[in-house]
Length: 311
Image 1 (cartoon, rainbow, N blue to C red):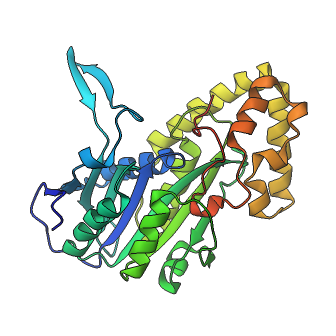
Image 2 (cartoon, helix red, strand yellow):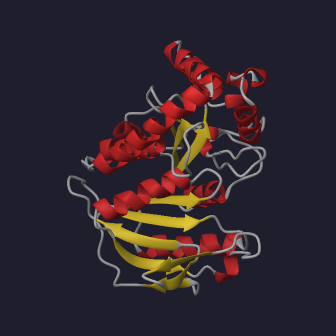
């Protein structure tokens, strides 16, 4: 085992384990939230974690402080593996949730790979959630990249070979490593409505959980996520009243979906909206999410500028 890995419990024998990983960064909040939700629903048991001190610059991304029962608590970046045996699934699942590291990516990848090897992981899947031009009133676009024939059939989605070229996220670098080591390294990415307030977009969460349920044969309770969506839609009613041009933007996205415009185009809000037609706040938001020419939302391509948070 890699020296930067700490075992939390005994490593159990696993049946055809699938490792699903998500990293909290520019494009990962909804994916991380979806995996955290599944870990709770599936009663996932922690087995290992990567020591994070050497992989983060805490002057760039500081840990958060909060109070819990009157006591101050620090929330440090996370990097842990948990094993689940979801009811209805024909294989075991290992869930990994981590913050995207700043430093020593190769060492972090080696630590990740050592746990995957110790657990006998058969396939590794990376989850991404991209804020883009999707309408909340239509099915959420979801992409499968680099999957083999079996996983393509399980997800009932077309899969294509990776084609992104340009600056990589850590998840992309890890996917390349996992492919090279024979564990697949394919990705599942949702394009969630960019105008929905909140880091962990509930539409993206629900789309990912539904897709995983379909592929694994599980039946996860979606009621808590549906409650988050109901709250979001109440907020949208007020937003549409205060910003009529935002409602117009959503109608354009609906029309694009209904006319079956190619997904690569609908995932670019800057292409879908004339910034001069919307209020200043929406225009600034669209500029912050404008996609770099070579980026690919299907593989978790990062926005050209801005931190991806909603306003």
